[in-house]
Image (cartoon, rainbow, N blue to C red; front, side, top):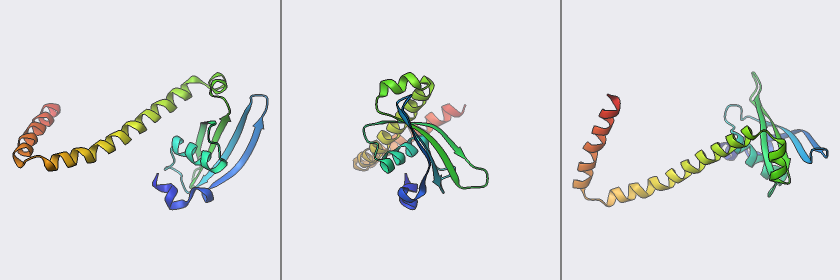
Length: 147
């Protein structure tokens, strides 16, 4: 995320509450992210929280990201579990399915980004005649879609 480099993630995270809920065996974090309203995604927020609080190897679940009207602040609520099985018992399965879906999209986008430079290099190596043959085929596909 380019915003981490611009703002420096250590300085923009302000801890509002940090509660150790022993009854549910989890840690509940509420933090403010200054200057990231409208730009912060849940997975990026999880990465930032994991780095800030050194939570490697633990399950961090973003429960809520709330923006404030007229302020560039996002307030996030996160649950930190030691065990993923316990987290799946306590937290709604819909939240896990949404996280998995967004992780899959992110991985797919990264794979496409890695393949794009390889395809460009391959197309540069191809003779000019092949490029001319490929271009009309793409145009005919676009025409079929528009009809």
